[in-house]
Amino acid sequence: MPSALVFGAGGQIGQAVCTRLLDAGWQVLGVSRTPRVDAAGIRWLQADLAVGFGITDAVDAVLSCGPLDLFSRWYAGSALAAARVVAFSSTSAAVKQDSPDPAERRLAKLLQDSEASVSASAAQRRAHATVLRPTLVYGAGRDQTLTRIVAIARQMRCFVLPACATGLRQPVHVDDLAAAALAALERPAGQGQVYALPGGESLGYREMVRRTLAVLQPTPRLLVVPTPMFRLALSAAHLTGSMQQASPAVLARMRDDLVFDPGPAQRGLGYAPRAFRPDATMLGG
Ligand SMILES: NC(=O)c1ccc[n+]([C@@H]2O[C@H](COP(=O)([O-])OP(=O)(O)OC[C@H]3O[C@@H](n4cnc5c(N)ncnc54)[C@H](OP(=O)(O)O)[C@@H]3O)[C@@H](O)[C@H]2O)c1
Image (cartoon, rainbow, N blue to C red):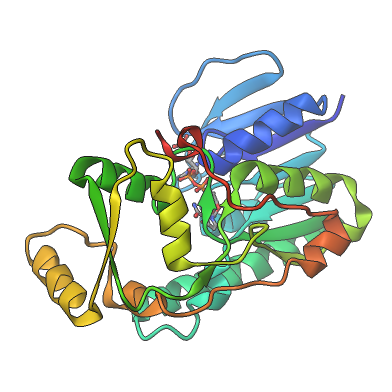
């Protein structure tokens, strides 16, 4: 029975990956910073990548579903000889590299450097690495975008978008990402590659939010307000310490099309993500 070491096994992507691994007959060694109870097929190791830890178990594969920079550093310094490595990065590595926000540019550079480090470390030990870059993730009811929109709309009974929110998005379900990770373990064609993993449909920001709100009954109203008015309200919210995640760079990006070609992942991994048809269970409802 093959075995896999999974970092971030309790996260929204990690959990979906573990479910798929167990269904496919893998033994899973899950890593978490908090103690967890072992279950059929899965044994937990308590460890913090920021502190570092040693592992004596031999595994066939290692999957990183947590912070990529921490994993890349740990992997470079470890003696782990797993033949296959699958690491989740993010399309932010491409999207944010030219951002006006220095923190976002730093994040993009960190992701790119970490991806390169994982590939180099794998090559040194004759292992094969595949880097997966998801777009906007949903499905586990724990994401910080769509599930958050549902939570705000439930409380406010409406949701407000600026008129500039016209860019295209490709929300991707966690289970489609998990399927891609399994395919990367199993298909030699997927090795040594960086794949963008967009969702199965490109849709406008407003339509994405409309379908998101429709998971609630009664469906909250979607209000579209002039962008300057929205910006003003956001500045006021920042002064009170709320909505800190909605930075000016995030607002500016709402009009951009964040669209990625699924073609390479389709050809290399047989990637076939679903269209965006959320229900309440996928968005914390
Ligand atoms: N969410 C998105 O929209 C999105 C989009 C594109 C890419 N990604 C990338 O995909 C990966 C997974 O994302 P996610 O949304 O599934 O994340 P998540 O739900 O926040 O889970 C991340 C996991 O990482 C683990 N972790 C965090 N710090 C750790 C540390 N110091 N040592 C060991 N484990 C640590 C946590 O495990 P414990 O708390 O159990 O220790 C947690 O389960 C990340 O690399 C993320 O950047 C996410």
